[in-house]
Image (cartoon, rainbow, N blue to C red; front, side):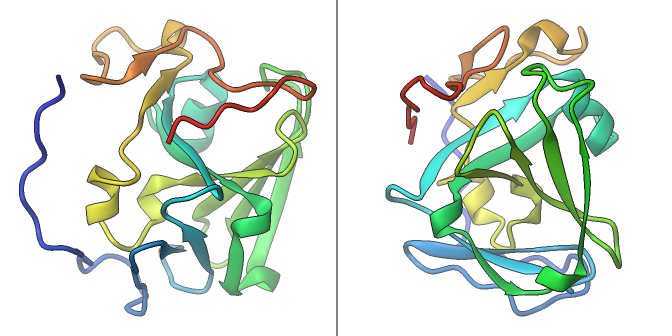
Length: 183
């Protein structure tokens, strides 16, 4: 059984970055880059929100300049660009992607925040970073990771997350295989 989270207010928007207009509703919230130029809206429940996960793959480690990435998957049909779409720059490559297919990264061209990734191996889905979500309460509630993938690449000094499914490789279906929703 996982430990119960500390009781916090219904929403929590700490002073972080250059934007102060993020919002959170029962079924939708915003994700904003560090400078505030790019803002997205996404579902926090229902069919548009597929899953939340921690990834230890070497690609996620390198692109986040950290030891893992905390992500959530949203169906493209449910992701809205509120502002800054023209401000996004992309970088795409397939050389280090486990599927061998291209992964395109969308960055704010002003502050460099990685807002989301789109992989050819996962059509119709965007992979957003939990850290971009404006309401920090969602980090511990609706967006709490349920899967930890590529644990074979996890650094030894970092231990598995309590109560989270551990997967040595990818936890997500490839094209032609039914996608599983964990949330």
